[in-house]
Image (tube, rainbow, N blue to C red; front, top):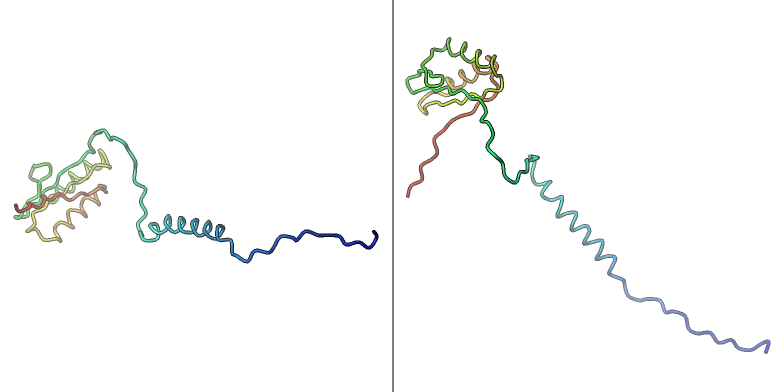
Length: 141
């Protein structure tokens, strides 16, 4: 009785296999992180574009058209002006509304330096928004 044999049940055997489930979980999380961050690393320009389901046409921004023909003549809203009058006219427009956009239409034969002079006159007058008007390319059929 005192020195009897106590039977013990055999204990759990150690696992000789690797449990792969946690490894797969970690790898899936890393794949998701790489999928989300890869497009951010590829683009150097970061934009926050507005979202809208259906935009309604609002009031058009105020604009003034300055045209420069091949002969070098200036027109403001289809009225001919000279260089000195252009500066005064642009200053009047900027004083009335500084957010007015200057839409510049120049003939392709006009030297680039002349276009830059008009842009400089617009900036000196206080107009900061300049848009260039061009004709769309005709597709051959």
